[in-house]
Length: 228
Image 1 (spheres, rainbow, N blue to C red):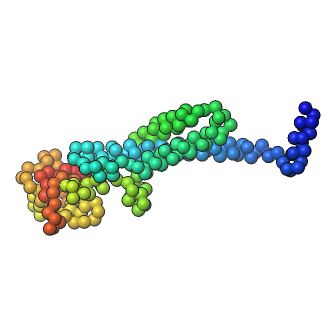
Image 2 (cartoon, helix red, strand yellow):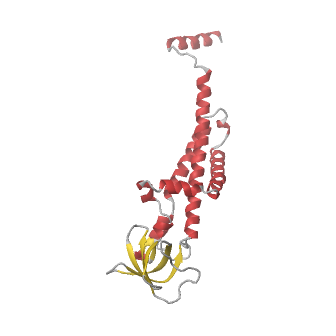
Image 3 (cartoon, rainbow, N blue to C red):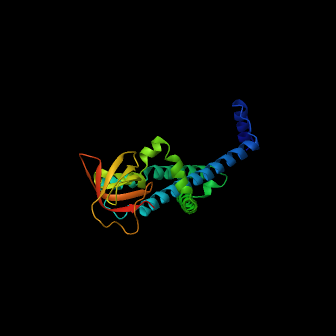
């Protein structure tokens, strides 16, 4: 036993191994707990944004219109799903490196992180943080390009969907709008009876399904709906 202890001491002396101060371990422990907490917070923001986007689709009538495969794929919030999965994994790494993290299995840590993210994400969406997060990030070109919201979905005249702001009215059947992409369209109401619950007004935001004339910026629609 003494011989083993001597060998250990010799190795320590030869390699000039010194003990680390306790504060460094405490600091590392705090760092990994903060990493886990921040990861759950970011995961919650991701869940809040995902919930907002799906509710946004529903509120603006996108579950009531036909979709092509491309439309369906665009509607999946891949950016937020990737962020959510990434930060759940970071949360797991953070918990693993805490003092008692080894006691928890991979599935328990992931399940706990997902559960907390979903709970807090739901709360954040209810109080409007999901919408605010999407609105702020949507000003960034890369995020705007990779995220598909209801305005993007109603800015596809090629498949019969158009939305925008009314900027001039000729009569009850003809007016013009500026769509969400900044293009001007002449709108023609093909029926004399529009949706009774809504009459387009100047500067109001509208959405409609119909078809456009390829030779001009004229969009023909049987019904016009308010952008709620």
